[in-house]
Image (tube, rainbow, N blue to C red):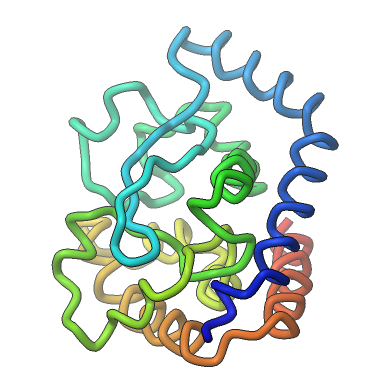
Length: 206
């Protein structure tokens, strides 16, 4: 039986997400105010992602780009993407835009630790060798999140004109391997190590 179906992991997710949301209520209000004050657009970005068993769900993220961003450019973004708002730059720098995904964890779409969820169009290009990734809930952080914590900078510094092509060339192959590795050998102990190393990465890049 995979760890994703074990009560201990789900209980940990519920406890961590509910506690985190309660503690972060003041920060959520401040961030929401800044986003709304900047351009009057929605606070949250609700993009479609692919979850466990390849079931689609809508992710919660603080909106960091202009309201019609998806119509103006590629799926992948570099840190100098002109679609990113001033408030969005700050949120992305400190990964604060990811915090609302605690809602997805609480309602069961995601886990604290698990393969980062992708958009349906990208998952459609995966071969059957990657199906194991979708045998567990996607997560807020994973091994690839640590290794590619500065993903936007990697894309920006690639020298490639197409950010999405840079992502597929420089990041995606390794990211998929790490996600496959996690899905095959997941354990609660590994989750704790990943959370610890994620926090270390956040402090290092700040």
